[in-house]
Amino acid sequence: MWYLMRSCSALVLVAILAVGCAGTGASSPAPTATPTQAAANTPAPTAAPTPRPTATPIPMTDGEGPEYVVGTSYLTVTKSATETVVGDVTQYRGQEMTDSGTTNDPRLAGTTTTTLNADFYGTVASEWGTTRTENAEGAWEGAWSGVSWDGTATSVSGWLVGSGAYAGWTYYFHVYGPWQPYQVEGIIFEGPPPTP
Amino acid sequence: MPELDPFEARLTRAVRAFADRAETRVDPISVADQAIGHRRFASLSWLGHTVPVPVSILLIVGLLLALIAWSAAVGGPWGDRTSIAPLQVATATPSETTAPAPTATPQPSTDGVGEEQVAGTGRFSIVDAGTSVRVGAVTQVRGYVASAVDTMNDPRVTGTGTLRLSIDIFAGVGSEWGTCRLENADGAWEGSVSGGSWNDGEASAVTGWLVGSGAYAGWTYYIDIRSSGLQTELSGVIYPGSPPARQSPEAR
Image 1 (tube, each protein chain N blue to C red):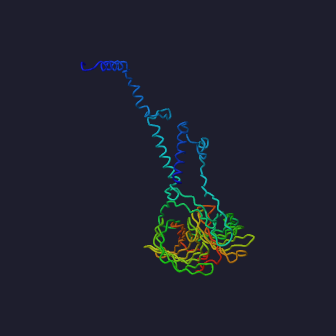
Image 2 (cartoon, helix red, strand yellow):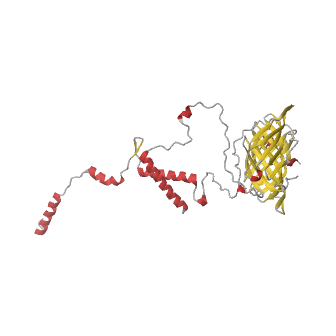
């Protein structure tokens, strides 16, 4: 029945469109995103803007119990690293950053600081460091490691242990993406990080 | 007509006289118009030109094309969808929200030499589902073993492997840790991995540091395994060095 009703609706719609076209012969309205002629005549910029991931609304969790969380990470350097060349490797040590990204779980809100060390092998690097996120209820702190390449792309993960109201809980995160803001996904669960 | 009586003779004359008064001229154009009038094609004007196609046929063709296009875009009956367009999935609960999966893009092959960022796909098959023990609110899975066939854009990390995991499941999410070994004819990569899973294990993110042997001795392969449903995407970095001295818990 639904299929029949939808077919009839389509026929009516098509008939209306056909009558409209026969009566006017007009072209369809131009898409709003179509560049104007003036814009088309403007010389193209030499450096095209980097496409960014489209932000989509993410429902907030209830902030209780085990959760799968998602969000973004946007890092700002607050202290530059020291740089030492050892053979073919460039060693970066002691960089400090803040993270202004957000997630969909209120337990992970607050101030996040991250330290970063890296060994660069040409265009790729191994990275490791620590992260601490704290808010009025408690904090998450632990180590992370991963890699980066081509200057901006990254994939790192870490296990943060809760304290304060989050004591006894663990936050595992995975941060990845070709450029900032990076994608964040992870889980919060009641228990310690895994041990071999 | 000697055999006709007087009445019949008068009748014959009367009929002939009536027939002689009848209109016998025929206008062929008028007759043709009447004959084909109801089948005449209406003309359609398009950009100043007359289209010699019946309007009714055009309308029927238009209706059919529109119906086909609409079905392809929207779908057939609700219970028998045939559309190839992606469906908009409603999120049941916030905890089941799925992060947007990265779009698979063709990855050019590397030259197989030197440090590289690598990408590809993995095909995993369960060899041993392990044992499950309920301890309080946690379901502990131990001895999970999966075989893997990794197809990457770098021959050094293309091969077959084995993934051994322990999993603690906490109401829909799980922590995972274990070992991974990948090998091919020239050497092998082996090390520890860890990560998380969600949506009752339907999706996961596991990373790890694998150390090379054979032709890959002295090299490290950081592996990133992201799974969603039946799709598993692999990515990582190969470089001539050791894993970081300070690592996340998988190295403990």
